[in-house]
Structure formats: C-alpha cells, structure tokens
Length: 110
Image (cartoon, rainbow, N blue to C red):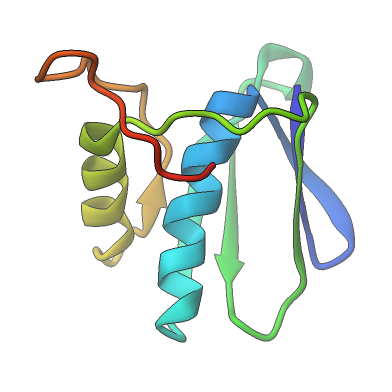
C-alpha cells in the first residue's frame, strides 16, 4: 500500500497501481502549472467519508510506492482521470475501467 503525502502530511494510502495513475495525471497537470482538486473515498477505517485536497504547483507532493517496480499504465483510465481533472470538481478517483484493446496497458512510466 503506497502513500500520497501532501504538504508534509500523509493524506492517502493507495494500492501502488492506483498511485501510479494518480502520479501520472497529477504530474501532467502540475507540469502545465495547473491547480486542481483531487478527491477520493476514505476506507472504512478512516470513517468511510471522502478526502479532497487542493493541489497547487508550489506545494510539496510525495508519492511513496511499496514496490520498487514501475507499474504499467492503463491509457483508458488515464483518459478518464485526465478528463475529470479538467472539470470544476477536479480529479475524482474512480475505479479502473476494463481495457478496451488487447492488453490494455502501455509501457508509460508509473
């Protein structure tokens, strides 16, 4: 279970695959100097609510992965997450869609 640390405090625990997709999408947005919301549902231990953070290029962000291996990214999921990140509600973490094509993954770094 990887961690997303924002502004010096751990904000979320995610499966490495999920975290790799978040890292990619957040990285694209920040590379374009864009600020946006990121929202995810908390697990039952955390009360089952939701967490929303405002991501800004000037605030430190750390992605900590459990595994040393990079994950293959699902381009369909990247597209869904990028579209969401470009809305007023921001990037709302949704479950990974089933791949449309053979294999459904590409070797993009994660």
